[in-house]
Image (cartoon, rainbow, N blue to C red; front, side):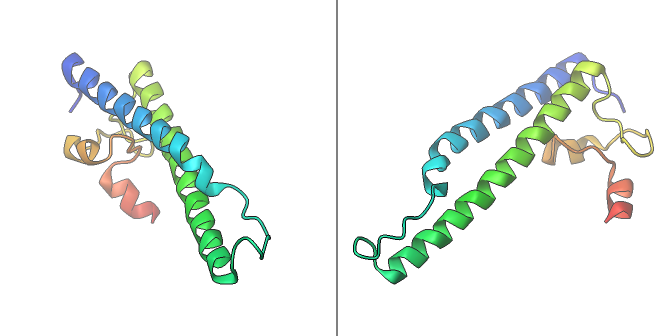
Length: 116
């Protein structure tokens, strides 16, 4: 199944909205990923451990956001090039329901299952 122009525009808008939301989250999450200071007088040991755990979680979230932003950019490029919705492995159409759930999907469900 190939997408018509309206469906393609809708998916493009969805991807752009996702990108904008991730960029907003990145702007607010940067402070949490900052280096934790070693000032024991200012921050107790347990508080510092909590801060380090929060830092690690913020860094992991940042990495996931960066990966998602790259996937979104790749999906937008596929839309512009006319390859969106086509499996990169078998060149068969990707089920539209799969793309509704994950608009960045590059593989059909069969190829995705085989690669895991």
